[in-house]
Length: 136
Image 1 (cartoon, rainbow, N blue to C red):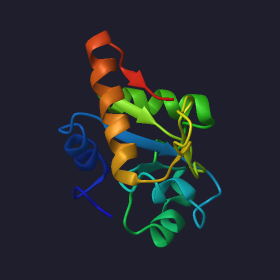
Image 2: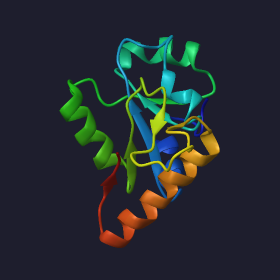
Image 3: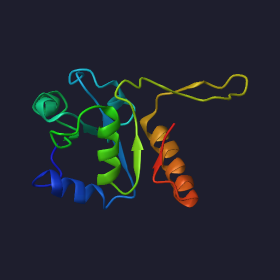
């Protein structure tokens, strides 16, 4: 999916949102499990994999850091430098689990709407605390 006419425009438009959910990935273009639970993730992949990721994930925005950004730590730093408020999530998340449940409650959460509400709540709490990045 394309949001802007180019990557810089897409980043600018994404920054107009309260926060952006970024998902760094490598070598998994055909198997992004997380998108079933969080359908509005933005994939961040190496430039040499971008075309393949777009082919297998046409419903998602796919961004690439500059070619000289190599490795997960520099990629995460690049993501933080491009966006105001960030939620980062791995590309292989297949469930969200509650840490504490009452007897009879279901531990696993697979409803994308509820997961989005949890992320939004964490965002607002993190913003009140002054954090730039938040996650689980």
